[in-house]
Length: 204
Image (cartoon, rainbow, N blue to C red; front, side, top):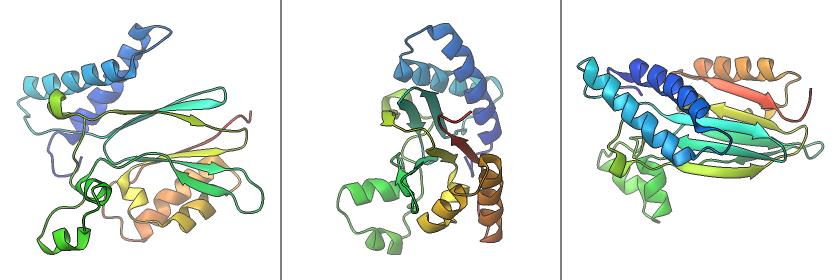
């Protein structure tokens, strides 16, 4: 998370501890329990190093069969490019945990809050937050062979519109699409760290 000195520590700890706790969880993981434990791990790591303001988003895709499971905290996003012929459909699969999304969900005018100087992209849930306030989304999403799945940080999705994302995800290779998404985000301003992971589902 930008603006927090422990962002790199939080991200590395979250990845390492999530993978470790997944191994410990066995065949039927309790995703919310795992994420809650990872959240505690991150807070503990910060305290050990004297960092009391640290945080990271978390976005996990568990792929297998006709459903994928998404585990989501923060404002990184998952998109599905559905293979539907000449014009594939782009679906946003996650809901941002930020001030802007919460205001829109409540039916409020974000323009009024923007004029007041409210930080609309401030996160309302992230790894490193007190557990009582932590929001964890766990979603089961249907997919078909040939669909493409994009996981990306806000450094990508805040720079590119849906048409740009759809066109880039249609490139021949997943690696080429991921690289191009990051390049485009940088070319269009690069206001934040940009990370993109693209998977083509059900295709060897």
